[in-house]
Image (tube, rainbow, N blue to C red; front, side):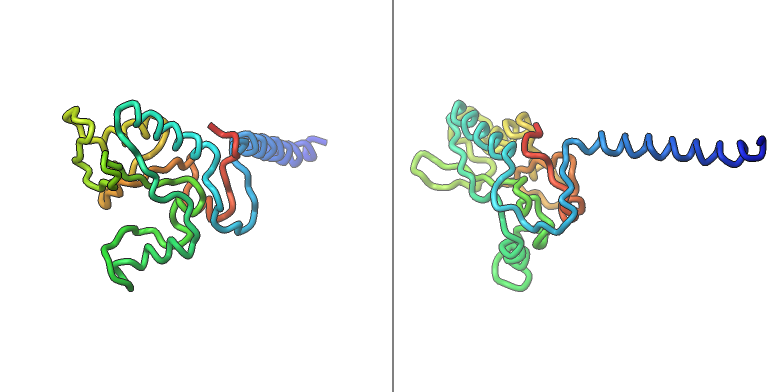
Length: 186
């Protein structure tokens, strides 16, 4: 009997440990859905990103800054076209993300520009259209960061000043595997 207990006790402990790990894993992933398949690119912004995009535009207007969203969801094909720009096609390099490697592909990113009083798009990050001695571009970035966006202008190396994203803690690799933030997640 003692020999049987010596054999069964470690297996019982291992089983309990694995059950606890499984429960922790399940609880940790309640904010995500695992679609367990290659679902491809999104067709619309994640609802939270959409909501925060709208708040960004509203809050910028209160500072007399007019934000224009120049890009949001991108197909893998469109992302690949942008990646080829400055490499295989004419133009300057605008991204280092190939198709399927951008948060735009999963509805979690937007790009913005500013609009001046004449209706022209402004890409100058030092532009101060509201004359408060602060860059409007950086004012918008600060609003965005307060709303939970990550700003491409804070990145090391390649600065992507128009880019804002909310990753929900997911990597590109996880998104490629079909893991998505749940729509109601804040």
